[in-house]
Length: 258
Image (cartoon, rainbow, N blue to C red):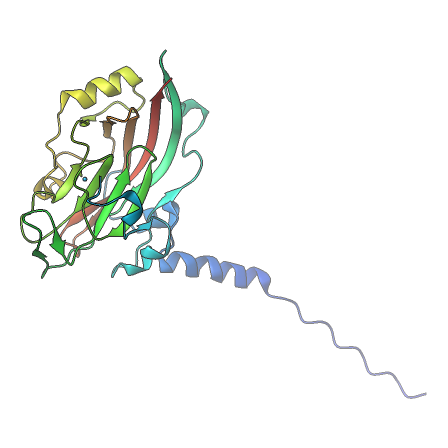
């Protein structure tokens, strides 16, 4: 009988190489995770809406709105805890922890150099606004309108000097202040907020010179709806190509009255 031809060895699948290349590709694009975002940092150190909440035109951070940035940088929020058991927040009688070490990114809004004030000192077009709901700790990006009043912290930059420029607490009866305490008690954080050590809004000039908000400091925010929030800044990313604004990577702790 003729000799049987040898069977060709099966081709080895190069799954390991493909997976590695896929990971590199994700980081190169600048995906929405905080870990990927921090790789791109260059810092050496670590108002209600005029309509109903449902009328907001922005997108939740981590969603499709991220692609609207010219820089292509991702941002947003991650579920779960960003700390360890040793980082458990302090609490006292009358308060309960409602959020613990929640990772958030307060992304610098996109600057439009030709934008104009079209709303009697309150509305800029075109505009890009980053908003934090201080009750629910949800970040919205690519919003088009800074809130007038309500439980929001907004961040916007209009070339015209509108009153809502900078980082502004829109809650008319709320309060916020800066602290160097990493793990304050609710009483300490409330006292810091009520001291009112921050201008409202925080001017763009003080954002650019890092004189107020920097890595290793925190914000204590008191909402008239009850929640008390501590935002600890873990990283500051400079954006010289974006009107020299700053993006803040933070961990959030929140208490609510029992």
